[in-house]
Amino acid sequence: MSDDPPEEVLDGVAVLDEPRVLEPQRAAMSPVLVQAAAAMGVSMVAGATAVALVHRRRTRRSRRKVLAPVLASRSFLIDVHVLGERGK
Image 1 (cartoon, one colour):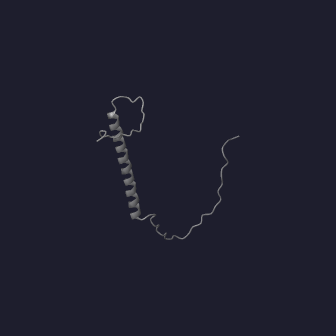
Image 2 (tube, helix red, strand yellow; image 1 turned 135 degrees about the vertical axis):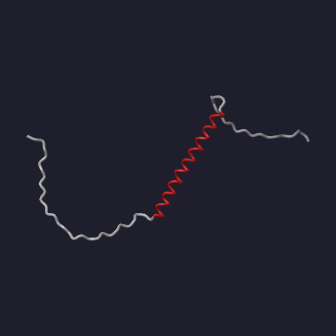
Image 3 (cartoon, helix red, strand yellow; image 1 turned 30 degrees about the vertical axis):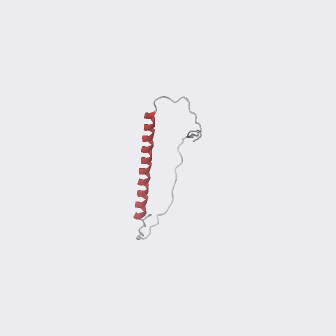
């Protein structure tokens, strides 16, 4: 026995049609819309790049200012009053 699939027999008749002129297809979008979309995409990439560079620059500056490792951190609410001399 062979594992080859059985041959398929096609029985058909070719139908010929008279040649005709096809209508040209319209453009999917106007060139103005394509340009606007491209400008928006480029602007978005430029903005994301600027944000990434600013963020990277800020993190580098903050690393330089650290002189010693921070072991603990506490926050206090402080109310400071400047007082004059008594009785005057």
